[in-house]
Image (cartoon, rainbow, N blue to C red; front, top):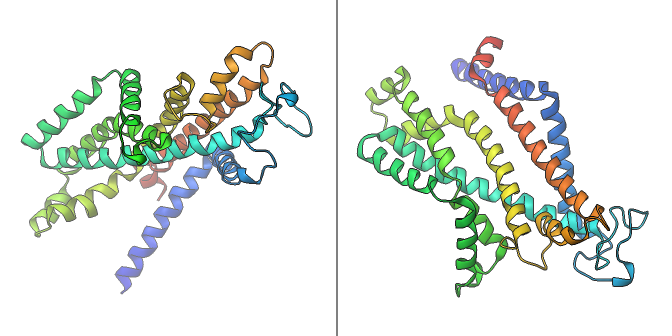
Length: 300
């Protein structure tokens, strides 16, 4: 019982140390607050008194004022409301596509790195093949193909974009996890666990994978930032989330013909993309520092 209590206290102290080290990175702490505000505002976007798709041509091209904080576009739609709803799409696509790509990458990387041999060769050749695809071309091609299918769930443009981005971004976490498994599987504690009769599943899930959490989380932040930029780019080109659903990329696309007459239409969605991606990157920096095993060991 005493040993168990000591183990629990040690686990709690490591967790507390990770949290403390994360918030020692001041920009990471600020980024968490900024991202939290963006998530809350996007979640409660329905509280806005304006509809993101309702047109009012008599109210077009208004600059920022008390009624329209970010002004209005060429069709009289409130830009602030459209950006809030666009944030829902961008954050949802970024989060879910990152989750799917990390999950697939972890499975492929873990199997490849732990078992090696033919399994490693086969999985890495598949990974290399995916890495050779021209990303933008494949994104556009897959988007067009999936929307032509009969299944209703494939016609949901948000879901399609999530699947496409995840399908073309799992290779990097797979390579990362594989490299970590190749090192960790040779450690003494893994050899001892195997000698004591530990199954492969138990060794992978209970002993190796937990030691990979830090790098996986850092990789996940980079994946999410990249996914948001990719979704915005696809929507800007017209191959992402389709109208009338507002996204930051589609707002930028409609603003390109009005950039000199009404620059605020392009400025605000571009600013939101910049702020969101920067916040996520700073969170990744904070996680990298927090999970640094050398620093954790020396501070303990």
